[in-house]
Length: 157
Image (cartoon, rainbow, N blue to C red):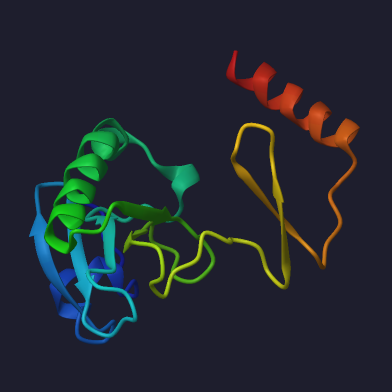
């Protein structure tokens, strides 16, 4: 299993104290830790044991098992907290070792469903869903967004 000596997440449980978290589950490929310094009950981190820097590098057995593992640990977090949702965040520029942040959530807690920087504006859609947009950054031109969507579609075909 590839691990990097200077990667704090590759250190496994030995690095948990520095990150203010404790390991709560593991299997051969994945480990789940829970924060002990958070505004959110059971805020947790799912990470591969093997060094995989970013989500775009996900491969091998980790890629094959991610969905099953993510569903399993998310169900456990939801049941343990009684919260109806578990938000999943993946950012890549903090620590270059893939980690999914799992945040059990209920309305009124410290979390927000706004993943946009700055002030936001909301618009109710005919479907009943709420569109959250940046009040500070205007939308990109629709034609550009559609062209990008087509490139993605082509690449995945």
